[in-house]
Image (spheres, helix red, strand yellow):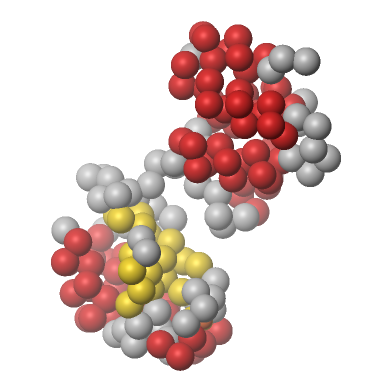
Amino acid sequence: MGCICGARGRENPHLSRLGEILDKHRNDAGFLIPVLQEAQDAYGYLSEDVLEAISTEMSVPLSQIYGVTTFYSQFRLHPHGREIIKVCHGTACYVSGAEGITKGIAEELGIKVGETTKDRLFTLESVACLGCCSLAPVMMINKETYGRLTSDIARGVIKKYE
Ligand code: FES
């Protein structure tokens, strides 16, 4: 059976890529998380349009989809910035001062964790272990890792990206 999203895609070309993703997973039992991951990769974040289309096409209540997207921190419901700052809050980083680093960056940028600056330059995220605990406390900006941070060092790193 063809994807109804194909028709939707003609109405709204923005959703045509989603139609392909849904077709690929239409017969998978555990389709929801892979569909959400691929939709986020395709669009950068999960907009209301995209979530409503997934709900309609896959017959999943919108409330269930929001439940999943808000439970897993990997999902973004808003557009993210050009630079994504991930401050590690795993155990080693937490005991080494991750909270203070996050607070310092949040103050520097004027946003809270999970938010994006108005100029869409930075998004601040708090994440689980980044896999380099010996460098704790650690943050990543896009694919670059910065370790043995203090709040001042972290603020200095951020300034380099402005
Ligand atoms: S706990 Fe932060 S890198 Fe492992």
